[in-house]
Length: 399
Image (cartoon, rainbow, N blue to C red; front, side, top):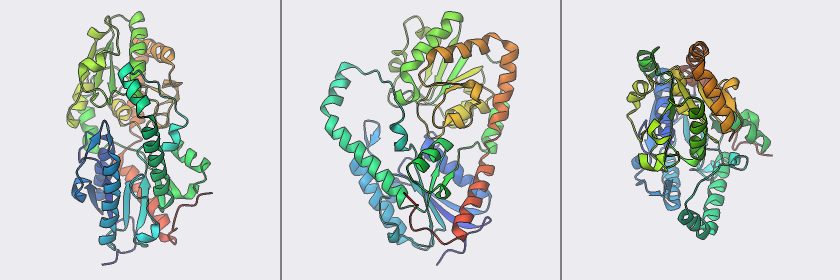
């Protein structure tokens, strides 16, 4: 059956992810919560993972094996071809469908969404701290890794070029795509948001009696998110505020255990650092309730869920001026990437000034209110409507 013309009040959308169905993971959390918001607006949405496309998820280190991604792309292509006429729109990862647009339903809006835009990688210098064994392995695998990264770049670019729309999560990504020659009219900025149910949990758990010296971070602990900088930032904070404490939540990823994370801090600072490798999503509001301030020294994000959720918990978040957080973290709370001295000083000034901290906590909460999933979904549908009511473009315009 052919889809009915797209409208704001009804339609069918497939949201595809090569990841695992879990709100603990940012990429699939985005799909699940976006789908829930669209459904509240009258759409019929399916979130379909690799497992549901009969692909077993394998990791090579922290990354999907190339053979898995190739198989996933073929499975996704076969699914869309077998279900031609089922969807009004499909949203998929921008490195998972590098095929000619003509192979797919011409009446379906094809929307590619990059989790991390590879073009940004050329502009971001991420410091790393590797053991000599890791450096040796990287050197030995150098040609193979370069080939893998080149293939990933090609796959992402090809997927985006063959899409009707590219949907990014921050305005920096849109700017880069325009610089690369993509048609600005075919690029949508659709950020992440917070559901009403989750916001209620943050509001219920929010405390006006938070530990005035406890600092939070939410996210995996890895080099992209500033792993090499945390130790220096916290050491500088404690040089002014010796009783300051740091609470790292959801760290499990590149470094699996608390001991691996604590190795990035000095022996003097380690007793003041609490590491929580994983937590259930609904536990986060309570975990943040005793914290007064958030840090987010990430060099590269699509958005930065952790920073937004800390702000929803009324924590002012100090962040690097980088893709993602720079869109919603107030400019006064941003510092240049890698400027650990400036971030530490901003943290100390806030923590030492209780009146200013109260005002900043209120500002953080107010700023987070601008990111409500239903408002975001409503705007996305309005943008889809514009593109669907016009003749579909076979591919995005690329100069």
